[in-house]
Length: 390
Image (cartoon, rainbow, N blue to C red; front, side, top):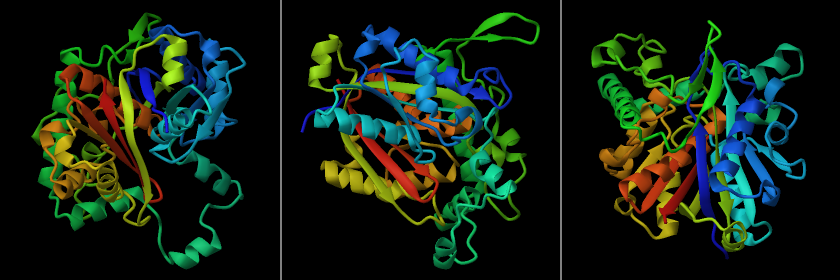
């Protein structure tokens, strides 16, 4: 089996709902990232053999194979094919797994894994709500309802179930959320995201043209008191909007090659894909899957959690990474060191590639060797990727 190397990794700075990226069509947003990967690696774009792009809301502006539309919106030649992936929030992490497996097999040598989500222009849940509203049914088939009677699959309910199962208090979750903002603030002020962010031109309300280069969701005035004042998502619950990921517009991408690709392109690798795992788990509690997925990945890789220098665990809700830390016995100082989705935003199908982009750059900045990324996904799924910095 061959190797898979990441030779370029880039992302847009996140945009808040209705914010600075609201004017960008998602195909153009993703296309800008594809162009950036070519520019940063200096490769001939005609050598790219496929683009695998994750997206959750594949409807409207993100419909009709958003991956191919992103290629057509970029400077890549028409000869570059593309396909869209939906593994819910793990869509672009799965895109990376597909890209890595493809080049490792030798079927292709140069593949882009990417992801995009404009949650402003394609609201969360639209792909299921729109057909249902117009009389075209629901994904909940009779057999699913027989298997899970009277169950309404809900990530919000799952996040609360995790908080109760692992006895995570509201105060602990609030403190975690504050830490996410504090780390994101420190990373931004120190310029730690500069190497990974693709500047995007935006027009302000007064007509002034600016470059969007800073994650818009960071709350520089966040305090434990302000977070503690946000009302609960549900009565007697423990989570609030402040301890949940932010709705976000954004895109990210990774250029993945094998040994032949390295030689053909004349590029140096940033990291090597060391291990990949994906599992199915309880779809009711739903968001707990990163815990057994990480345990399985470490076992299959012959590693221990202490062998990993940095972790990126998606902050869909504060209860997810907090429970993960508790069960794995992981070092909180290595987790989401530059902040996570609570501060930086969670552009659904774009988050897998976004987190990996940040992880690869953080490993290079810190000198760490191994990084692990995992995220909870709708339906009770989780991907885990372990990379080695080179």
